[in-house]
Image (tube, rainbow, N blue to C red; front, side, top):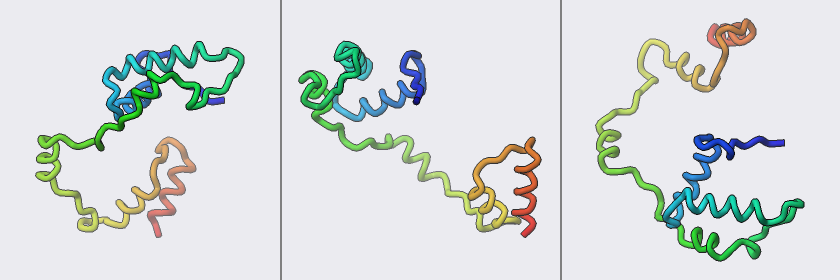
Length: 123
């Protein structure tokens, strides 16, 4: 069973849903989410199936016109252009950096993790 934090005002899942809803020209994101939650809660308390045909016209209308693709504001683009990408192929140990990025994460307090890392970098 999956758990969602939709009952928490600042939950991660709710933030994600709000950002997805905001991609549409629906205006009030929290308002449309409240309408969706109310409609789902009152639909069928005995595990009914909600289909596109059963969703209210008001909610369908909120998602009918997709917003233009997200864009990066010009002031942020200037900052990105000013910064150069780091070139890890130059320097003392480019192979070590490449291997570490492929490895992902590890726990330095776990003996097994540290043994694997040691073997990997000794080659």
